[in-house]
Image (cartoon, protein in one colour):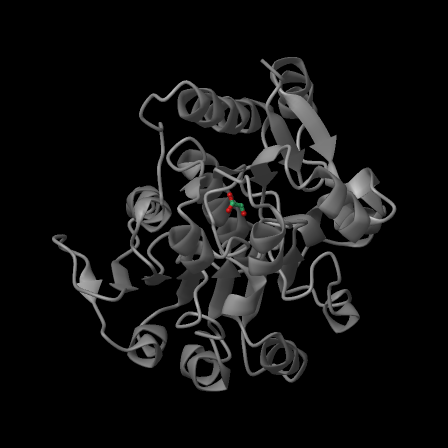
Length: 312
Ligand SMILES: O=CC(=O)O
């Protein structure tokens, strides 16, 4: 039997790439100089697409691949996959939930601590020799701060559980109230006005795009801190930047940006902002577990076994 054609959309993980190469006929989309031509030439041999948070499968790609059976995402977020088109065409979709929850939640707490305690600025202070000239200024206590979480799914819940260890009261906003003792707000603005730290941990959908807008930022206020470990487009970034520059927001810890890897340069000089290059799940352990899930889903699909983490 001919090897099964798998199209990988962009470089994402060396181990995953090597294993795909061993088990399938792997096409690397990013190495194709003429992608439209390549797609029409290989249209009949590609049966799977492997995408991630940067490049997935949009309607054009799905339509260009008539033999496509499965999109296996090396990410938990599926905002780069046209799920509606996949459903229409009977294309299965999988992602990598659970295995990355700890890392993303750990990083969210790390960002809160880094922003409030100015950890990155302190590090620069020591390295630059400034400490010899005087002590670092006082910062803001983290333990006990009121945490508001947008999205109480797996990751939101893991953040809440960690923050409880710091005696932080937890509230949340989600589409519906959950069976928990945390305080529920049906409005994001109300959540923000009752939080010291607002964390974005929901999926990116048309409904959650710019869920953090000027009104929410103003409700969080000049002492409030925004943490985004979700997706850049959850936040109206132009509003965020002006609020930070004008001192209308107390600080921000951002792992994601609207047009990453482009990051607004106005943020570079701000001490109350911590900027990370979308590394929520970026540990050796977790990326290996994510790769194994992608491979496991593909193997299951092509041997007619139940998918490990089906979405569609
Ligand atoms: O951003 C990363 C993911 O969705 O897994």
